[in-house]
Image 1 (cartoon, rainbow, N blue to C red):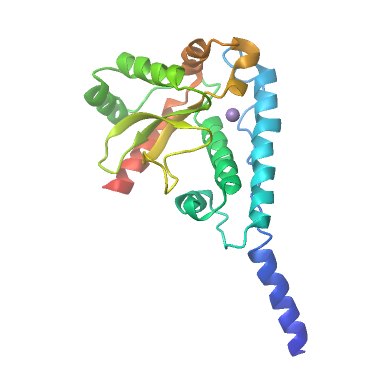
Image 2: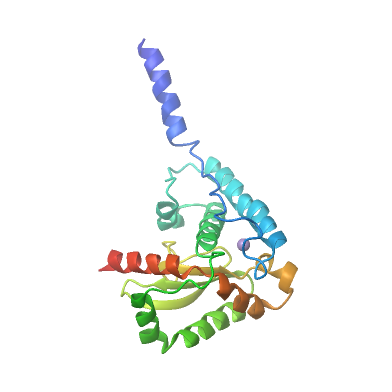
Length: 226
Ligand code: MN
């Protein structure tokens, strides 16, 4: 009896820790939903191949780690310096893509909340200047990475870029803060439709940003730091 209980407990322990897996979150819209700004083929390859690969590679890398880990991606990223670069790169890839899909929408003309708009105007003079700076940051990032809008712990809005699959919630990130918006500027995000014209891709993707979602994330980020 005792041995049986011990066996069951051991199995539960292994299911609960070593074999805990991350799962691929569904894309919140159809592959062609963001046409003509993001073409269906790019969306399909980006989600079903690139994003899915980060997810599979993360699970493989976690299987190899001797360390305990959380299946809460925020918690994993908050402790990412403890893990291998395979865990770091792929956990970043999983988080960044899920975040990205969720700040885009086929809904037309969503608007930032009064609070977000006022704070953007306070920080960047006006909304159009904010857009210009965001696009410029993304377009001029050398190599592969991401352009973000984050809220720092001083409650400031900032446009920043990260290399590769890094992000601002990783404990070893040079620049830290809570993301409220991001755009993927890896070539795989735009090359089929835009080839080398990254700035044009950024200009177009601006049409499908979900400002309601971004506003909600902003209000939560501010509460967190207040
Ligand atoms: Mn990507």
